[in-house]
Every structure is written in C-alpha cells, then in structure tokens.
Length: 335
Image 1 (cartoon, rainbow, N blue to C red):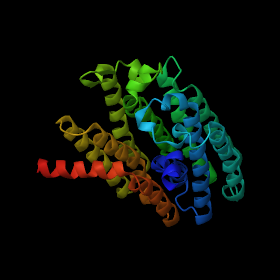
Image 2: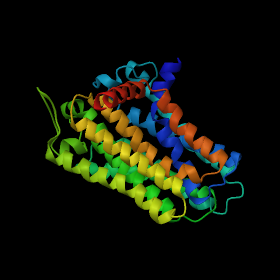
Image 3: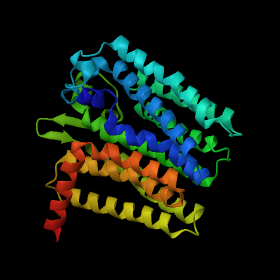
Image 4: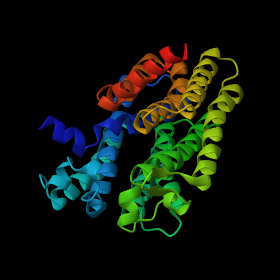
C-alpha cells in the first residue's frame, strides 16, 4: 500500500515541488514563521498531487507501453482513471483552502498570490493535456516550466513583500531547469516509447534516435543541453554576486554545486558510467543549486522545512544510492 501511494503521488519528485514556494518566500522574506511555512508546504503538496496525478491520467495510454511505468497503480489498474482524476482535481480547492486558512493571514499581497497559484494550475493542466501533442515541443516544455515557476512567485507574494531580483533569478532558473529536465532528461528516457506511439517531444524534434546500438543523442540535443547547462551554471553564481553580494554563504553554496556539476559532467564524458546514475546525480545537483543559494539566508523554520523537503524524497529514492555508489567508486578510481 505504501509503495503504491509512493508511486501514485510520485513522492520521489515531491522535493522538487515542495521547495518552490519556500524558495520564493525565502528570497522575499527570510524570517517566515512556522504557520506560514507549513501553509506553503501544504499548498505545494496539493499542487504536486494535481500536477503528477493529472499528468498520469492524461498520459495513461502512453504509460501502458512504457516499461518504466509498469508498476504504477494506474497502469496496473489498481485505481481507475476516474478515481485518479477526482483525486487530482481535489488538489485545486485544497490548495486554495490552505492558502486562505494559513497563508492569507496578514498577507497584503494575497490576491496576487492567488492569481499566481491559479495560473500555475492552469498552465500545468495545459501541459498535461497537450504536452506530447504540440508540433513545437519546447513551447509546451516552457508552459510546464512557467507552471512550476509561478509557485516561486506565489511563495514570494505570500510573504506580502514585492518580488525582487533574487525572486526573478529563481523564476528564470526554474524555467531553464524544466526545459532541461523535460526536454532532455525525460525526453531521452522515454524516447523509444514516445517515437513508437507518435508522441512529440523535444529530443525527438532535435534528432535523437533509438538505434540497435543504443541511444544516439545527435548534435541538436547536445547543443540544446549544453546551452541550457551553461545558463544553469551561470545564473545562481550571477544571482549570488548581484543580489546577495554581502553574504559569502550563498556564493559558496552556488559555487560548490557548480563545481560538483562540472566534475560530474567531466567524469561522465570519460565513459564507463550508467546513464541512469549520471542522470540522477545531475538532477540532484540541478535541484540543489537554488536551495544552496537561498537557504543560508533563511530563518530557522523556513530553512529546516526547505532542507527537509529537498532531501527526504531523494533519500527515499533507491536511485539516489545507486548513483552515489557510482560516484564514490568513480572518485576512488579517479584518485
């Protein structure tokens, strides 16, 4: 039962959702109280349930032929699409109820926050419905990225403070992150099944192929991934230098994650690593960069919630430990 719930609600990806409004709040108002911090986590939980369960309902026919989804409750028929859709849609009023009950208290910018939240739900629903049917897949990747990024704007608005340069940098980073995660990681992972079923994805559009000798990425995907990666490395460092110049910890955190990312990519380029291990570590580092940038300036309740929300889903994922074992082995071999 617990394993089925873990897969159904995609708990392995929960940290990527949960930290977004917390980062937005921390960028605008580091000293956030326990009540409002927990309220933001509750809103993020409701949004996460909607985003992933609704996506699984919309992609059910594709997932039924994807071996990586074979154990998912919807694919196995353990829950009906109608019941899953009802659970997903229940996340919408739940999020707004939590917003009014907890987050709204004392917030002068609550109407703007609710507009951000409503737009986030709408954009995610658009992506879930048409994400793999658009003739130009990067556009729907961007729509999805905007949906997630609006959770950052929502978190900032929930503090009652106006958005500043740090908030805008976090939003830009999230947009780039989703372009990378959905357009490169996810598209390459599902490439064979997507091609067979006629789905339209960024990797397919850019010329990636599943051949008898394995996955052929091609120059288009490579150039796209490199451009995104360079931007994802530079943006946190720029934000630390421009928006937090008097604080050393954000610069050290962002620089440390950037260094680890460069080391990972260099180790992967030498060969001998499983793509799953490299991909998992790459995702962890991409998700860690904004946390490393903002967490040092947060007050204790917000910092603890952010670090736990980021780390616990990763610790519950067996792929994390497989990837870390490879990294430790590669580090020993490299020394």
